[in-house]
Length: 332
Image (cartoon, rainbow, N blue to C red):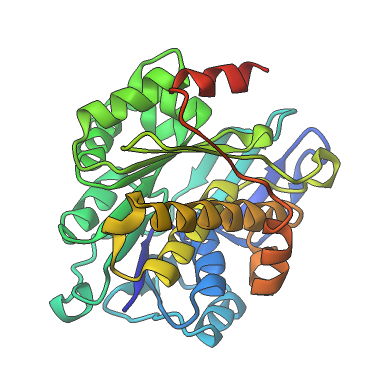
């Protein structure tokens, strides 16, 4: 049984941040790298990668993932022997949000046809930030799996890509977006209205996770259980927030996969709700460690117990007073 992680893989080139403008670094990034680094920490030997990398993707990273038992099967995870990895450059604002990105595209991202014998062993699928058409094509191969997706602001702002993303939202059970992305995606002015609209327009949707940067995150289930997880990292300790959202996505799905296996119908029950809260705390704990180093370095070199130590200091707040509470909380 596997958690399938289908996403983009790249190598970061430069980081433009108010504190260290133009710092040149070269670490493996991309949603797939970040999500796999934490998911394989939470559920070793049960993570499978779907995607394409260039010939210069760091062997050391792949070896760490292999040592954790990650399935790196050439039918799912392809190496472009003729081209180097895509190069990613990030630009941040003072609040550590990525305000702009630039890509040097080298690798032709291809749709992967998952063999039936592998597909049947993947009850959980995380679609990290990737080309929306590839996310959709992957989701359509897993009609009976519990699937979630994340994306990026600049993709939402492209009309053609946004159309595909709306088709994707109609096929998944979980949507993970940050507070700016969810407003742009739904054309709403309030987070509460945006969440309500997502549930209304997508009948299969069970869970919406809204990442709010330094304020933490909110998770809302279709049965309207609201869970708030505060951020726990100090601003001065933050080094690189690129991939923090995918660390949360990979952590959430990795923990849920480990605890629920293929019984995701129980996510709405009392016991399942407790597992969801624990999963969100572990995901935020992982992200808190991740942003204190470049790229996925922290998650590639941490232990499960180290993440759990951070997560255990987090107090999740659960409330049922209505979606508007989210807006009030964010405005405080």
